[in-house]
Length: 257
View (tube, rainbow, N blue to C red):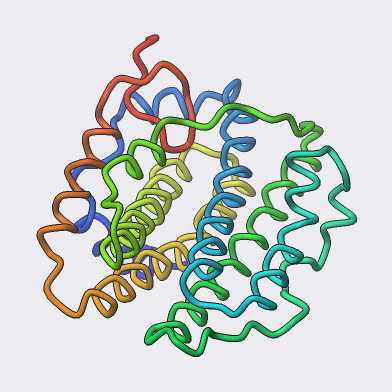
């Protein structure tokens, strides 16, 4: 990807986020000894991003048969991560859903939500496979690691009544995707050539994901939500800049150095 294209993708991301990644995080994340930990967390971030999108459309957008189809789509990945069943080979070519997804008849925004989230899920599951392939090719075995406090910290500020809860979920999704994009770009110059190329290749889809989440939030709200976007921008920046006791892809400033 050309530098002009990278800059074009990152400019709105940098304008959207309220702070850059702390240099102290970058100093830790770039250390070779921490690569396996970051790749393991990145693997889980891809699955969780897909799961979050799947839960959204299961709850708000699809009919009952499609809810079961979505669960079947994720089963091989969840079997691998949570139950130790499967392998890189069994997950090959599983990122495409095998059945059609149908919208609820009584939801005014079902189809738009489905169209954007199904594409996002396909890409996140494909990225999951790519990260697992990188781990495998480098002789790094999979193991479960605890998640960072980042996503839970964002979700703890979500409203609990509808449609405001859905709007908040979508805004939070936008910030998570934007921060992922910013971190891929920040970390890439310090990685080996193959891994750097992979992280740069993710920028285009991650940048579109954050825009899709925002577009959906604005459409469903039907009114100006800039104040709510700004609110979560402050929450996100606080989490990213606060001291953190463990290194993860979305962790804050390391406090052990």
